Amino acid sequence: MPPPRSSKRLLTLFLFFPVLASLLTAYSQCAEDTTSQPNIAMATTRILKWRDDKKAVFLLCFDDSAPSAVKLVVPELKKRKITGTFYINPGNGPYKSLKSDWETTVPGPGIEYANHTFTHVGATSAVQLDQELAPCNDEINKCYPDRNPKRLISFGRPGGVPWTVSPAETEAALKKYSLIERPPFIGYPFQIKTQEQMLSYVDKTLASGEMEQLVFHGVGGDWLVTPFEMFTSLLDKLEEHSSELWLTDPISWHQYLTERKLSEIKILGSTSSQIKLQLVSDFDTNLYDLPLSLSTAVPKAWKSCSIQQGSLKATYPVIDGQVFYQATPGKGEIIIEPAGA
Image (cartoon, rainbow, N blue to C red; front, side, top):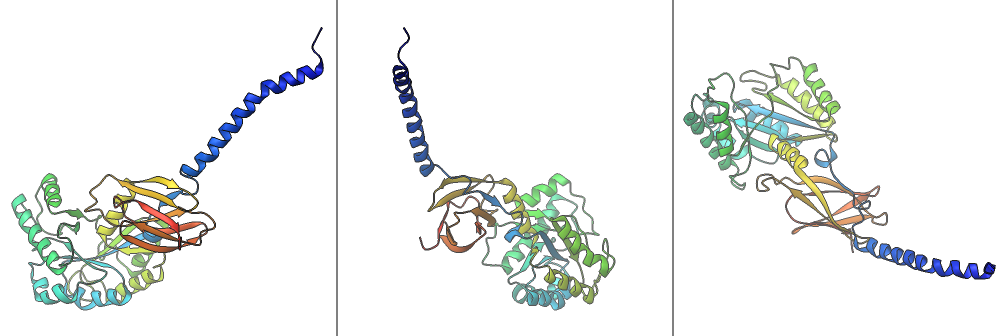
């Protein structure tokens, strides 16, 4: 005789209780884990392509220590707060004629010096190359006494002179003096012939979203002369697009690009009251020490964030659930908390 229907119900409930208990235990453990494990979605962090989330990068470079650089270019750049990099030859006549200016009045915020060899006579041996690079670096460091003398410095090979040292010898010498060769040359009156071409080059840069540079010699005078009105029209256009362009120097661009490509974001923890992460790097952080621009997703309730890395601490606003800030690879944990917490 089959068991009564009520007995079947009791048997079903009896068998289901262990399953229900197991599900409740798993749910409880899961709930506990969400409070201790990183909330990856909330702490999503990305390294911005360029500094301050700018669309592209533009470099202004000036060769040969031309006197017009001191007399005309530097005042314009400083007035507009636009960065310029000057590839100097401290052992040649033009530099010596304004040596005091190059050493004292020209250096300042936004003005960078780079190695263009000491005398601009070229290099036909590894020994001569060393003799050209070392004193040029020494003069640059003399002009910036507050900087680390072993930092990266940009190098521009001089044109129109003998250069018969091998690529291997050149590479070894540049490494010895922490020199980074600049991007391929482009400038007036070589690849750029007209004001229209020069201004359209800015548009090309914005469209590409990458880095472009223009190299000048004389401006308004000296040699290979760019007309002063053409140069200032370029500065006007760069100012017009300054919210979109990172106007910087070759070393800062090189550092940012290298760090961005070789840094990894590691989330160490994420709760409703704190996000902790780290920029893990695989390069020499003594030479590559430029802060990167990052954005991190934070809880909707946060209106501003306190961000600390090592001894550095600053407050940043939250915009559409994201906080944008600066951090340096290999310089310790990054701690993000709601401001005032």
